[in-house]
Each structure stands twice: as structure tokens, then as C-alpha cells.
Length: 212
Ligand code: AMP
Image (cartoon, rainbow, N blue to C red; front, top):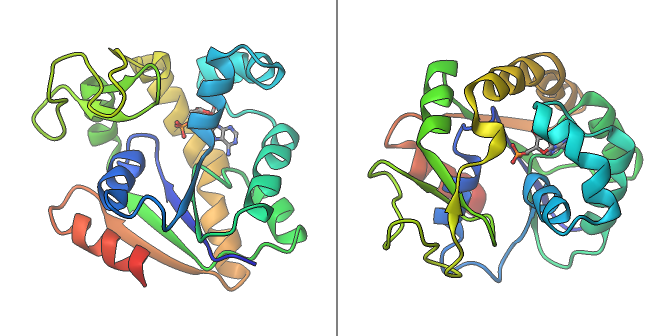
């Protein structure tokens, strides 16, 4: 079984951005499973999965466990590299399904930020409409050319679920359904590392944990 690292944190905690920075030059060493990106791609292509997920995603809720488990557990099993999951498991039901499938994560890296910062980051975030690469409208990670993705040349757009009312709903869902996953995994012997995502030192700590 490949090593599985779970990347954990509120929406807007910086998971995708931190991961993107870390992976530069290491793209071939890890398999990254971003459930949000997989779902957004399915939605854009209007596949069966995308159509089933659309309502939940646009309202800030979670897509039902059975749809997600099917998508992710197979992908984890089929990978031949260490896997970083961004956005899975997000409910205790998903975490149970993962353990029942014989997948015991190596560790959990939790990026922590206050809700206020999450709301500000959602206002500042833009993503590539084609490949999903995240950027910011402030000077944290701006694209080289305004409105254009550095990676694939796609057009940068705001995510529908970054609207304030949807972000507030996503924070509520995180607190109620996702946060208990950390406790569940800890109780099952998985090591949990928490990093304060708002400090400059968090970049280095994050990279060290992923490289170990
Ligand atoms: P993200 O980009 O990780 O914030 O995901 C965007 C949206 O996709 C979420 O608000 C959920 O609607 C859905 N989603 C992503 N990961 C999961 C998951 N593990 N379980 C259920 N829904 C998910």
C-alpha cells in the first residue's frame, strides 16, 4: 500500500496553494488527489458525476459519501506513488470507509487559520477555469499576466463557492462534519500535525512534513 498523507483544513486554509508551491519540481514524486478539483472538472464536463455533485457544491454542502468514496478509494488503490489527499476524508463516514478499505493514512497535516482569514482569502482568490490552479488578486500569488493562468494559459475566474454566504456555509459544514474526522483518525492511531497557516514559517514546516 502506498503512503497516504491527508491534507486537512478549512476551505481557504491554503491547502491547494501550499501544495502547489511544494510540488514545484516534485510533480512526479507524488500523486495528488484533490477531490474538489476532480469534482469541478466533472461539473465543467457535465459528466454523470458532475451532474450529481453540482447542487451540493454550489450550495456549500458536501457531496454524499457514497459518491465520493467510490471516486477516491479506487484512485488511492490504483496509485503507484505516495498520495496526498486534498479534501478527503471530509466526514467521519468517509474516514471509516477508507479504514474499512484497508487504507490507513501515514499522517494528517492540518493547516489552521481563523475564520476571518478564510473570508478574506475567499475574497482574494481566483482560480484557472481550465486546470484549477489557484492564484490571488493580492501579491501573495498573483499570475504573471493578469487574468491568465501561468500554467496552461486558461482564463482566471472566481469560484462560485467563494461568495461570502457560501463560504460561511462551508465553514459551518467544516465545523460540524469535517473537524470530527481529525479526532476519529487520532483515535485510530494516526499522527496529526497542526500548522498555523497564517505565519511565514508555515511554508517550511509544511514542506518538511511532506518530505519526511
Ligand atoms: P474544495 O475545493 O476542496 O473546497 O471542494 C469544493 C466542494 O467540493 C466542496 O464544498 C464540496 O461540495 C465538494 N467536496 C470536495 N471534497 C469533498 C468530500 N471529500 N466529500 C464531499 N464533498 C466534497
